[in-house]
Each structure stands twice: as C-alpha cells, then as structure tokens.
Amino acid sequence: MEDQLLTALWCVAAGFFDIDWSVYSSVLEALANLGFSGLSISVNLLIKAGLYQSLKLDVTHESWLARFSHPLLPTVTAVSVSPYLTRQKAKIHKSACDRATHYSSQNMDSMQTGPKPEVLHNRIAEGKVDLVAQYLEFCALGPFPYKAVETLQEISFNAPPSVHEVHQNRLAQAINKLIESPRGEEVLSTVVNLGLFEAYRELMWGACLLWLTSHHARITIKATLSAYADTLSKDSIIDSESASLLLRLHQIIERLDSLHPNIEPAPSTADIEEIEDEDPGGSLHVDEG
Image 1 (cartoon, rainbow, N blue to C red):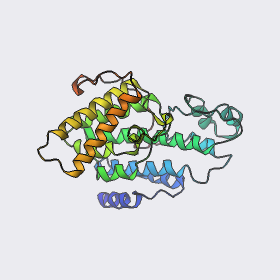
Image 2 (image 1 turned 120 degrees about the vertical axis):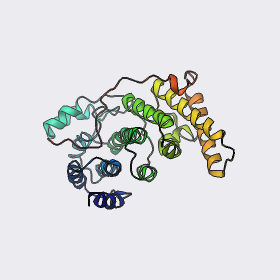
Image 3 (image 1 turned 45 degrees about the vertical axis):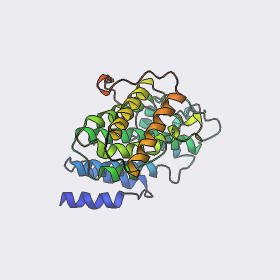
C-alpha cells in the first residue's frame, strides 16, 4: 500500500505546483514517517520543489521575508536582503529572523524601498540548485530514484544570477559521481539539458547569469562533461539524439573556457579531489521538531 500511495502521489505532484505551501509542508511531514526508498526520494524531491515554487504565490509586503527565511530553504545563500531586512526584523518570527541575519550578501542589489519579487525568486532558484545536487547524489550512490529522468525534467529551471559556492561545489561533485555510477548515464543526458546550463550554451545570455563562480566547481564540471563527451564519441553508431547531446556538451565546455579564461586544464575524473563535507542546509526529508 505504501508503494501504491507514493506512486500515486508522484503522479499528482509531477508538474502541479499551484498549491499553498502549507499543504506541501503537511505532506512532507507525513512522508517523513514512511520508509526510505527510490520512490520516496523522488516524491520528496517533487513535493519540496512544489513547496519552493508555492512560496512565490500571493506574496505580500508583510509575508515575503518569512518566505525568504523558510526553514526548508538552504541555510546558506548568496542572496542578500539587507538593509531592508534590518528594518523588518521585528515583523517576523524570531527564528526566521535569526536564520535570515546569517545569510551572506553577495552579488545582489540592496533593498531600499521594499520587497522586490526577483530577490525571493532568486533565493528559491538557488535552493533548487541545492535540491538538484541532493537528488543527483542519490542517483549516483543509491537507492536509485523512481523515474529519475522524468523527475528531474519536472523541476527543470534556469539558474539564478548568484549561487553560493557551497551549492555550486556540491552540484559539481554530484555530477562527477554520475560518471562512475552504474546507472549514472541514465540521468547525465538530462542533467546536460537542464536549464541550469543555458547560460553556458546560449551566447545571448548575459554575464550576470554566469553563476559558476567557484573555480573548483567549474573544473569539476568541465572534467566530467569532457569525460562524458569522450564516452559518447566512442560509440560506433551516433544517432541524431546523441549528436545533439554531443553538440550541447561541446558548447558548454567551450563556453566555460571562453567566459572563464583562468580555468585550469581539465583533470581526469580520478584526479578530482573531494571537497570537504560542508552542511549546505536543507534535505529531502523533514526532521520533526
């Protein structure tokens, strides 16, 4: 019955985000009491992505900061809301204030006259970067998530202008592990086609969207995509889909070079050092209490 319930919930959650965030919170709390499986991993991802999306709905002058500080969003961020945050601290719950005052302040305009929707939206998009990284870790290490490709496609999105390096590095390491994973290639092509990498493919995108500011993340992603491209090139038969994927891979790799000329020569995947385990905040499961 549990598997049937989760399968049905996956179908409902896929692509359906226009629900109040409190409903998603209740579902996540219920899911925390169920078993851990490939099904639960995918369902948790979709429900959490839905909650993130719903935080954008019906935002008011009074509620936006509490949403910005939602406890399921990552505890570290590159999005800043000061000095407007300082003037509004007394209006939100103390725990939300405490979390918000610890957020870093990189690469965002300060808030002078009131809330700007793009600040909350960028904060949520940054959270989705970390959410994708968490999911890819399961794809590489197991248990392999249910309908992994379809689940990733459901939460495809463009990257915000600014992403904290913790999330950049976690995502890069998760993508790298897919190369060595028995089932990693099942999702690698989907990862390459995520909107995350549009800024490194289309020349029309501005430099403000070049979110891969971490040198370590860039060389790790470049090495991984180069290795993946080499694997595809060795296939005796390259169909139109593989040819399109190869073209996209080479576009991303070349754009990484041209936009970040200080990038080091790509090491082999075996030479990439593991970054220290940092707590990037957030998880696919909700801790009660």
